[in-house]
Image 1: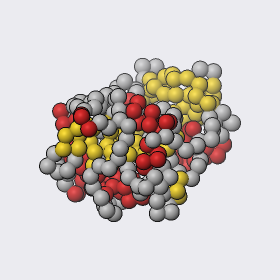
Image 2: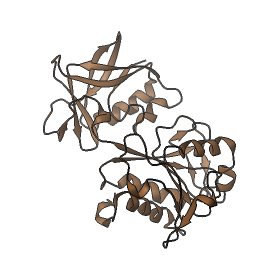
Image 3: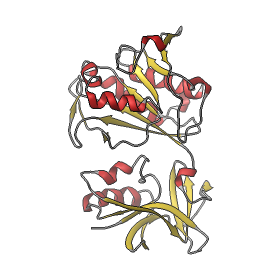
Image 4: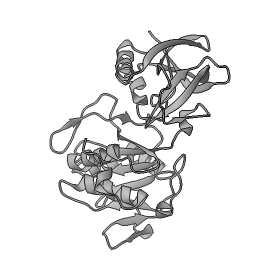
Length: 300
């Protein structure tokens, strides 16, 4: 089975990393640096160009024994984006790497060679569970995934306590897979818990309750107005004129800059109806980035 050297969105904590974890499809070996290569930023995606110069290095991760089917998914993704396959020997492993054939007109060179330094990523986790309301989470995901107006990239994904590969039946009958299952989730900067008839049962299960509580220590929490999660306390809350409730919670940590609007708040959205998810996501973005022109949200 092939080995991979990954340096961008397939790295741990980035939005395509889950591909490497499908059904135990690979084994992480170690983090290392590739000599003779430069890292560039092409919009929201990285690209490596092989220079052969000893002063040029790129940080990445080695994954060994990658399942052939998963490798073909990654291969298709990379080749369709204009990358080509190359082979390099790293730490004694012959690894496949996907590189760009020529630097061309890249937006930026990343001098450190680490994609973590290119631009921060805001990780938004959306909890889904049996009986979740489709409108609450699908609309929010669409808004978050299409947003491009901030200084961070937004990586929005679904989280569930279901076992990997399990289908989750939503309140309207839609069947969905979660992008990540507990506890194998990336770093979360903002966690949302949508509504639905199954919400109360879900947030009272020990695993999910503990997960939400742990996230509350470092991440912003966005909850449905009617949620009665164990992390919420009436003593810490206050209501504003828009009908939203704020709870005293820690500010964002990690790569995301601290913002006064969120310094000590947890936001609870009170939107309802078929546009609840969209309205809630827009409210979150407005709190993060200020006013939101509709043209900032692509239709695709």
